[in-house]
Image (cartoon, rainbow, N blue to C red; front, side, top):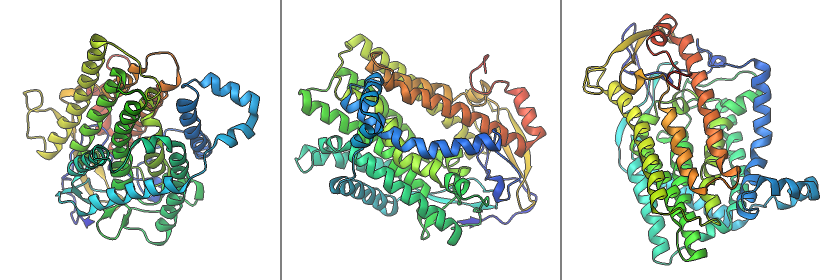
Length: 462
């Protein structure tokens, strides 16, 4: 990780709304991204730490064994009580550990060994510039090609993954929790950069993380692995798995499963095409490597994000050609708009604003801020294209895309729509945190920006 040695000069990182060039206040930053009172924030941390692991098992068991019906699960709990829930909590098995270890080792090897261009992230509050190797598209292509090939040639049956899904999720819950403990200890003992620090509270440090850019050795970036190569890649792998399992169960892949899985795969493909842009977002450039980000990507993404297709495995719903095409086209349009929002911002950053947005030179605001070391720097805030509609408009098509790849399950049960509801809450909360942090960082310049781009997410409403 390089250190930028500049004085009062312009920062090379250019941003639309929400640059993500911030870190935790408890580590010495001048911006505080918290929008909640300390009591509410602390209660939320404890609740999520205790509730998320059992919820993953509840979601899996209900989707796979109870027809996706939350009411059936409630009836089960009324009859069996807590002991009943503990009995259905699957124990990690050797095959589950082997599957996880094989997948993780394969993705780690691709991350380290595949060639890729050199990409730099935004300047951190401590003045560090993270350097990445952009080989995500190649890793994605090799992963899916290999997975489908070993099934096609009879070397491995992906249906095994579905059959042991509960054990895999249980192993991920435990293994990822241990991994987060490792990150907590590493942050205290051997941080990878000066972008690290403690709040003095062990729960907060464990939940939010100690390090902004933790690495093993010089080249293995932990957050790129957990967020991109394990979490997001598993989304695509499981989407393919669910299609294969349904094919083996029913001798066909229903149009509902095809629509849902294709939209998920289009979205994940979009993600890896844009992966270098993701390294400028809040997840990487602001949120530290702790339970919130790393456990979430290692466990929550493969379990919750894939749940609409998990539900469809045992529900081969026939939509018909017209409805299938309608949902598919609507979902692809939403994913494209989401991609185009990110593309505009990335182009704006790459060209220092010397580009065309919707056929015109972009309007912008030069916003000055001060780093923790007292250096004066500036970012450009984009106020053209999609970024003139609202400050976080890209969240609208993202939520709608999630709705469209859930819609093939129709409305027989509420639980398949949990991901859409969760995503909506997550992104609205993220938009608030981003606004709060940017206001603290840019001050009067952010007020100018908000006067020019009035709405936070939904134009004309919010």
